[in-house]
Image (cartoon, rainbow, N blue to C red; front, side, top):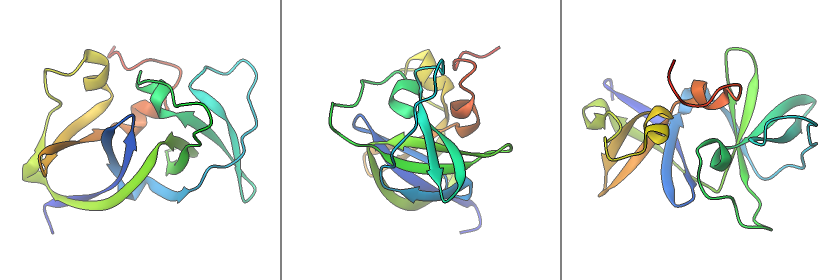
Length: 148
């Protein structure tokens, strides 16, 4: 499919998200984390992946969604950034989907400003929306999603 892209999909608080599969290093089960003193609340801790220390970001908190229920362990999607690797904590992993670019649209105006700014856009598939996360903005915990 020359004019399509592949996405690693996942769920957060009942919402269906995707990230470009080329940015994904690996998907793993819950890993024990070391807390980081004075880190923003979105940084759940540090994960040791075979000697590589990776910060773990709670995407529910990052995106302003409801907190995860107590006792429910998240899964990790480890993504590569320009500087290093970062783990996104998600509720559930979906499939890898290959989608045609003609299904891509900007985020709907009915979404909140914060939600729209956290997304690259959406794909309408099977009567639901696949929300494409802007991974570069998601890993930038120093700022919110508001545009400068």
